[in-house]
Length: 144
Ligand code: HEC
Image 1 (cartoon, rainbow, N blue to C red):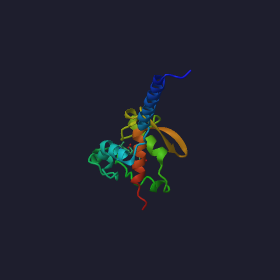
Image 2: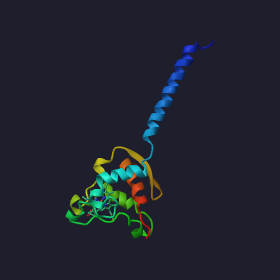
Image 3: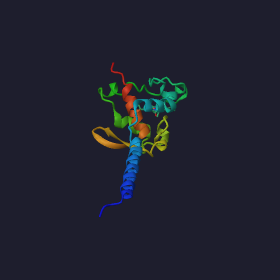
Image 4: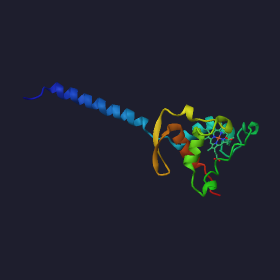
């Protein structure tokens, strides 16, 4: 028996709907870029670490500890960006209490939206903001 034309149409539009759903979800999976990281840095980090990340932010002088130069993290680590170390410091380390550090922990504001990031060879679900920061921080490393 031949199928009436409308079943084809209904199935056809259901498929179209499915395809557009996938596309919509797919867009959320787009990885954060250096520009995303730069924007997050300007809004959350530059006040202490400086707009260029070298440590001379407007709030730097009033802190109990000076904000380090974030453009020399690779140089201080044998030329390799210490991704795991830097990201866990930014996120906040549960082993060290809040009082042990001057810098605030940013993990609480981040945890919802995770993207896969390769950190030391392992694909690690990473908060989107942190993944953007990683791209940005790596891009500002100086090799002098
Ligand atoms: C209130 C000032 C302040 C803000 C805001 C701040 N930091 Fe910091 N940061 C510091 C200080 C001070 C240190 C030195 C360690 C300490 O005392 O916590 C530090 C340390 C670090 C380190 C460790 C550097 C190393 O040598 O291992 C990284 C990485 C870092 N900050 C990145 C960031 C990023 C990225 C942001 C924004 C999401 C940020 N910081 C926001 C003050 C700040």
